[in-house]
Length: 150
Length: 150
DNA sequence: ATCGGTATCGAAAACGGTTTTCAGTGGCTT
DNA sequence: AAGCCACTGAAAACCGTTTTCGATACCGAT
View 1 (cartoon, each protein chain N blue to C red):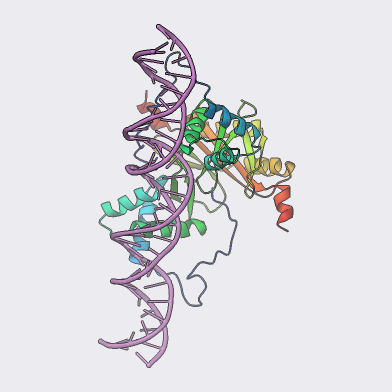
View 2 (cartoon, rainbow over the protein chains, first blue to last red; view 1 turned 180 degrees about the vertical axis):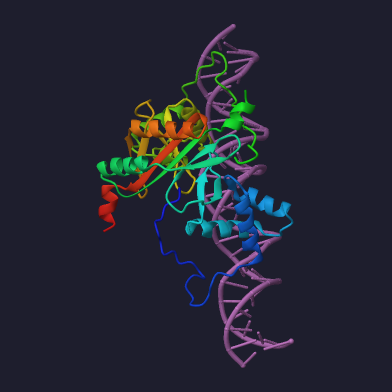
């Protein structure tokens, strides 16, 4: 599922209680830093490895949990690679967009395509579908990897 | 597949070697019939269940193996649902196309979109990417499921 | 400071889909 | 009839992800 705002109120545990603001824990901050530094899409496990590499002690479970919340909040994009693994990346724009991802190095570029949005909406509607959502992912070889490979 | 591309399992046993044609086994034929009858996308496990329902004794492993080969040969389409499960469906047209899939009942419709193909190609090229491929999936509620739900 | 309540952590176990292993089985060819 | 080898499938391994649940950390109140 690519970033889209189905805006489920999503019974976020803490979210409700009055003054209960999200606690800025050491783990959350460390994760946030790593996400800010990683350029492309990374798996939860890669992110966890990067945290450990930096000497941060954060459990894999916690990484998964934060990523889940962040993606629900629209703070990170998610996409599934060809093996079914979920990859995460900090959103640069909160607007709906898609990605061109290098299948070799994972680097990616955000692209916009109002045309696709409209097309998806139209063909679905024509087929009688409602509550439409879509995922679009483009894979290819980035210039660097293409050069390396020749 | 981020930084490390998990080694190809690849070594496909029979690997379309020399003149070894596919043997028309009982299992292969049963699977083929089920695929022909199932209207939309189904998971390997659903297909296996359907086989058993029909009294065919085919192992789940064999179902997976055949589906893998069939999809490599382009005889079936595959797509991943939102949980990461792989769904299969016999191709109706061998031409490149996309699907509008009901997120409730799994039924799907094939749609064509030359516009999207061109768009994907264009934005990728503009970003300097080559050897471009793309995935587009549209999810929604089909008319029947939408009705049921109200 | 101390206490109590609770949000958060994280190791370990559970989960579920898929793949691999490996000892057969059975279809061809000779 | 004999043998080769592709195919089969039950069980186990795999692997990413989620759940469980006791421990811990943070916060406001005392």
